[in-house]
Picture (tube, rainbow, N blue to C red):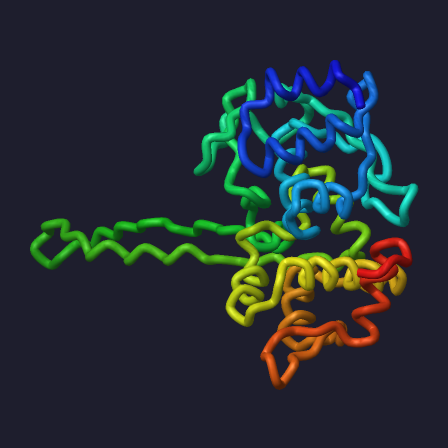
Length: 272
């Protein structure tokens, strides 16, 4: 642990709650250059929250300039986790200055962090809509028999035409890199998958496990999609990954054999 970095976090980081807890954990692992590389699972364990929650908080801190990923942007096996540089004052590369949201976590540039989780972004960030405006009012004059010029009613304005450009398909690796480059979360809190999971009683831990397996599978296969978030929502709703089942006696979710194997692999071969 670097006492220098820990002191800077305690004195300069204005966030509270889980954001402050995560920054403290990172400082505990940092060297004097403010560089650290704890795994998401380690952070989650230290703050007593689920892995998915810890991951969302880390993305939130990255998005607002308190953390910068300097190596292993997509993480990986133990020993290949992300490497972060800590900026306690929020002067790292973050989202555009002046953006605000609901909570009172404010950094040195006046930006405010959102609630305990991802900051919001557009639904897909991939498909865009363009609007062309062909409006033109044409007035016609017509000469009557008595020589008095009369105006016809103005031609009604044309309604703006909306054209939607077809999004280009891209690999999941390309999508993850785009999220990192733009400083946006891979799955923002606004994504409907979180509301669906809450509705059916699926825990953040199981959802995080599903996202990890979803990424591993599609990165290996190099498959392409135009909307990876929508594809993940379908995977959850239709249980394509077969990681869990519902216990008929208790109504609780239990891991299948495939789910147990995935959980052990995610925890480095240890019991989940």
